[in-house]
Image (cartoon, rainbow, N blue to C red; front, side):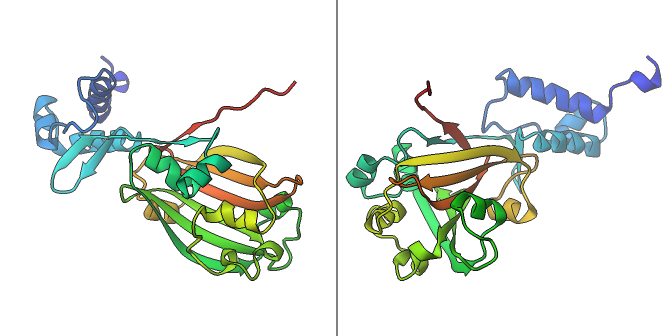
Length: 257
């Protein structure tokens, strides 16, 4: 075989392990052979085996646990149930926010940390969706980090027009009370009648990687959510940044004529 066509040893090892993972021989949570064992099995150097495992890590197939070794990545994606997560009936029956109700329904324990509430200039895309200027501090920005079983799964940054939020808990408190955010909006005359969600995918920023503990090679889902009230007016915009290995989207909607 000509030198140029010989497979790179690290890729040979990665290809072998990938096939075993996809074929079900190695299942989520299973420990992989050690770097030393792989090096012996493939008659190569240990750093070559390490490079193969790093390739699989970047593909999102394996995780390294310091002091324990390499394991096939386990994934328990949370489903974002678009059909009913914002339902008034669900909010009334549970007294929970959409996220808390959704995570609880899927048998996991939710937690939401509100890390800041500030009055700011809205980003251009937010200002456009709220129909307001980006030139003044016209919105309240609420930053929330969302957890399931103490694992960070998403970041949500909510923007609320100052004229709606001023003087209310929306502008000053992390505790939203029973029914959470949308119950407070209803009290202020804005019932959630319709939503628009624009979904894209990208690689995370360094800050998102750190805060969400995102493994190498895992992208994020970027969901730009706009809440629209009974009068057809947009009254809040939230940018959700979601770990793609920890979240899924499940939408059901009528078909327009």
